[in-house]
Length: 336
Ligand code: NAD
Ligand code: TYD
Image 1 (cartoon, rainbow, N blue to C red):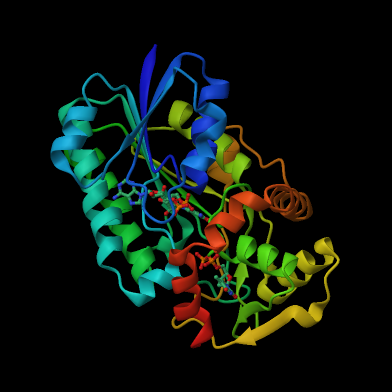
Image 2: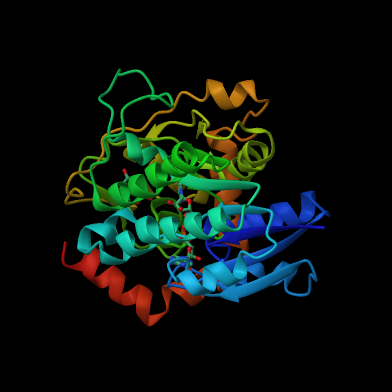
């Protein structure tokens, strides 16, 4: 039996990955380290509550004593733990630097001392900055040019991970994925926010003129890519993970409304996000050469996401009715 530490495993992608690893790798025991911030949710792990191969530990990746203690006898580490929402980072980035930069360092340092076999840092395409229309998609050697506090804090973690490979020869791998969608995404992010607002006939706040372009990677496709890179990637290397499921804000919002049979009049164009990155696009030929390809195109990924939120209303109502979410929504949208 091998032990894999998965951090942030109560969040959106982390919980999907914990379920993926337990299902696909009977030889692994999972140590799930998560601080349970507003975005961490044990409901995401209900299906494995009684699984003897899963142990949940509530704690902070930036706590050196805790992390050092947990790392004993561990084989692999996958670091998802992070503050993940750009809009919150614009309100204040202290916690972003703490978790995404210092937390990543603390985890890397403990992993180095305990001679972990492989460390996967889950990074983001936002480290590359913003593309103009028509510009070629980023490859793994494109310059890093992050433009908002979230992406800067993630770049710090990403580059720190690389420095541990270069400096200490630690077997570190880095993935940079595009926008994920799918089950269990906290409804502050665009797709789950819009789906759940539309179900309730509330306005869908599209930033600016809805021209910013994003790729939409289905979370299970991301999990398969991470599994492949963790096991077959080359240490020291970076792998882009994207699905070429591009859409701009207006197009995507209309597709969500159409899937739910709701009128386009629910769209409300609101003041743009400051420093809004115009376009992200990834060249993923390096990962495809390892043998990965996404299973879900945009239509399928969106339809499966919409179906999940329709079928799991208690999951998101509990969040949207919480004091935390209401206070955030008020601050972010009502006074916009
Ligand atoms: P999320 O916000 O849903 O979950 C983050 C999880 O990390 C939560 O469970 C939270 O409690 C935990 N956490 C936060 N700070 C912590 C700390 N200091 N110690 C321990 N746990 C802590 O985020 P997500 O969307 O699932 O993203 C997961 C990772 O993937 C992040 O590193 C993010 O930067 C990266 N990523 C996300 C996307 C995306 O579209 N969501 C795309 C590319 C990369
Ligand atoms: P988001 O889900 O916050 O991801 P990211 O900023 O990391 O890409 O936003 C995705 C896109 O949706 C981005 O172009 C901003 C836009 N957006 C809106 O138009 N309205 C919203 O309420 C939110 C949260 C995002």
